[in-house]
Image 1: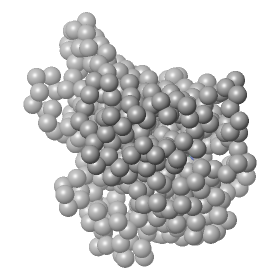
Image 2: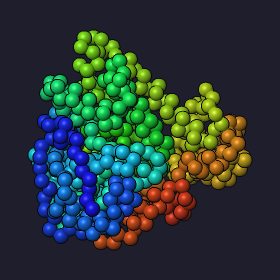
Image 3: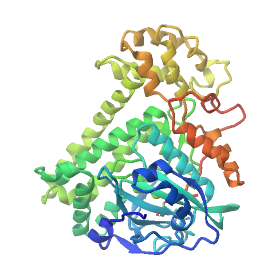
Image 4: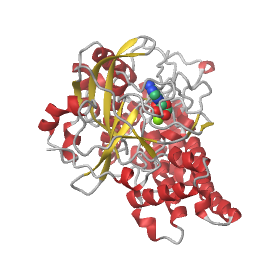
Length: 489
Ligand code: AMP
Ligand code: MG
C-alpha cells in the first residue's frame, strides 16, 4: 500500500517551484488521522494509522513523493509582496481518487524552504489542529474546502511568544493554485508561465472552458462563479476567513489557509477576530468586497491572455469585474432562501433577508437595551430557531434578540413566503453546531497540554453539524470576552 502519486505539477510546470526536503522530526507522534478522507484517497486507514507518524511528519516520505515548495506572490492587506511562496509547506504530489478527482497532498509545518525568508518553516500543534477542526466543519457544512488528512506532532519545540509543541499538518486540496500564483509570474513579466499556469488550471479544474471562443476569459468567468458561490456560503454560516490575501484565494474555489479564521457568534457586520486586522479590512461584511478586489488582481495578471490588444483586454476584464457584485448578490440570496425555508424565488427575497439581518444586528449602546448582550442576535441559533417559528411561535427565537420588536414585525412577512415543509428545510440548511470559539480554544489548549479527547469530541460534533448537541450549541459564556485569533502561527 502507498500513495498512488501522479505529479502533474512537477512534470508540467517547471519553473513554478523549487525542490526541497522536509526537516526531520525527532519524535513523531500521530495526533489525528482523518480515516474517512484516507479512504476517499484510496488509502487503507489502518495502514496509514501505522505509517503516518513517519510518512506525514516528513521523516520517511511515501514512495513517489516529489517534495517541492511552490512559488507565489500576493497582496497582503492590500500591499503587494512579489515573492511569498511555500515558506513552511511542501507539495508531496498528487493522488487521483476512485472518482477520478485529483488531490494535492501537502505537508505544512515541515521546515524551512527556499521561500522561508526569516521564518522557521514550522507550525505548532494548536494551529494545525485548528486547521483540522475548521476544515472538517466546513466540509460537513457542504462548503468547498481543503481538508486535513493528519496532524503529526514532531517532538520538536517551536518558538513563538512561548515555546510550543511542533506539528506537521498533511493537507489535501483540489490544488494549491492561488491568485498569487499568477501574480508571481505576471509581476515578473513572464507571460509564457502565466499562460502555462492558465492552461494547467483549465485542464485541472475547468476542462469545459477549453473549447470556448476565449478560454482565458471563460476561465476567469468560471473562477468568479466559484468564488462568488464560496463567499456567499461563508456568509451564510457566519464564517470569517480573517486573512483573505490574494495568496489565500484558490482558483479551485476551495476555502484555503485556516489561520485567524473564526465563526461569528452575535451578528455584527463589522466583526473581526484577527489580531493583525487593525482596519477591519477582512471583517465579516467586507468579505464580498474583498472577493471583487482580489479577483481584480487576478484579472490584472491574466490581462494579456484576454486579448492581444490591451484596450480590448481591459474592456473584457471590466465587463466581468463589473458583474461580480450582482453575481455574488444572487448567490447570497440563493443561500438565504435556503436558510429561510422559502418557497420558490421572488424578487423581494433579498430584501426579506436584509430585513432579518437588520433586526438581528447589534442595536448599539444608545438603544437603551437592557439585555446585557454586547452584540446582535446569535447568528447560528437565530437561523436554527426559525424552524420553531414557522407556525408563528416566537418564544424560542425572540430571547436571542436584545429587542425583538423588529423581529416580530418581520415574522409575518417571512411566514407568507414559507415552503410547505419549511421547518424541515430550515433544519437541514442551518447547522446546530459550528466550531464556536470558546470550544475551539478549550480543545486546543487541552491538546497542547497533551489531552486530545476534547479536540476529538469537537471534530465529531462539527462533522455532524445538523445534529443537536447542546454543549456545542451554546454561545460563549459571559466572561469569554472578545475573541482574538492569530496569524502566521
Ligand atoms: P499565511 O499567513 O499562512 O498565508 O502565510 C503567508 C506567507 O508567510 C507564506 O509565504 C508562508 O509560507 C509564510 N510563512 C508563514 N509562517 C511561516 C513560518 N513559520 N516560516 C516560514 N514561512 C512562513
Ligand atoms: Mg497562506
